Length: 183
Image (cartoon, rainbow, N blue to C red; front, side):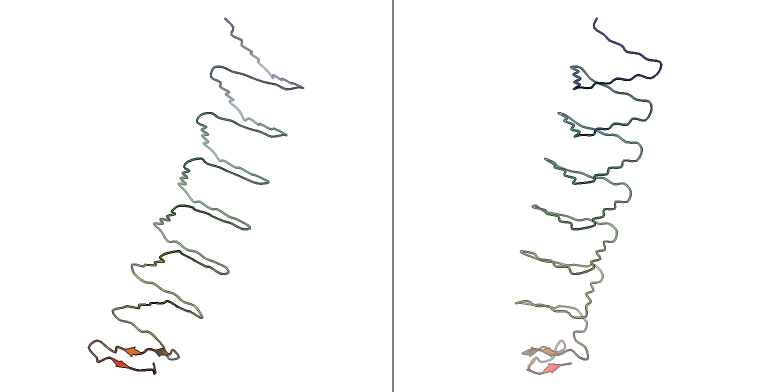
């Protein structure tokens, strides 16, 4: 009927000193009940016309000695049910041509060893539900139009000069004009 069965109760070896081509028109299956080593001293290409699934019950290690390039035509989803650690020894760049969202249910900490610069083409908003703190040895706030609003608090200190053409004073007090510095 055209069926071919090769059976061996001991070792089986096959050597081809030229090219080898295997063509299967039906479904194919390789099953090993022990460890498998697969090696290629040249290039190794895999072309899949449909879905490519890999299921691993143990540890998955990938080591690339040179470049690693991944191109995805549509969507990418990653789910890590434990800890995710990513380390870059040299330069890292991220380019997002659309929107980007970060949603963190725990705490989020950025620790920068040198400088940080943030630029936006439109609006920059920072909001905190409980407390907002900015500290530095030297600080500058510059704007064409600036509003500082609070229900109570303090602006200034012993060595801080406050200059204003109009000082409103406490609520209900009469405003007056001054060019002097207030402490």
